[in-house]
Length: 58
Image (tube, rainbow, N blue to C red; front, side, top):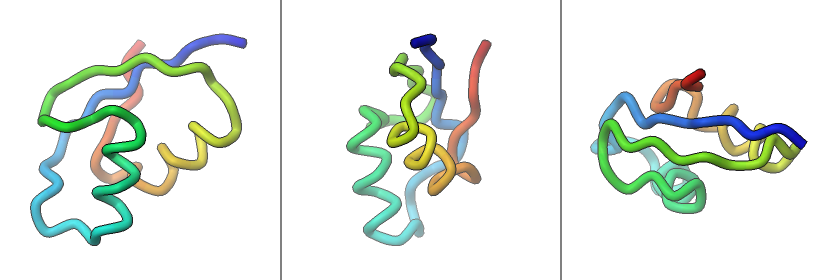
């Protein structure tokens, strides 16, 4: 499978607890951090849940 790079572009302050847990599960703990994951349906679902806080980096 291919990989995707995910970058946190907005702060988690004020986000609901479940979205904060999703960011933690993705490995995003600080603003402007980039992580790389396999492009699986579960990862894409987590990205969709916090799409307003993250961006896909090419």
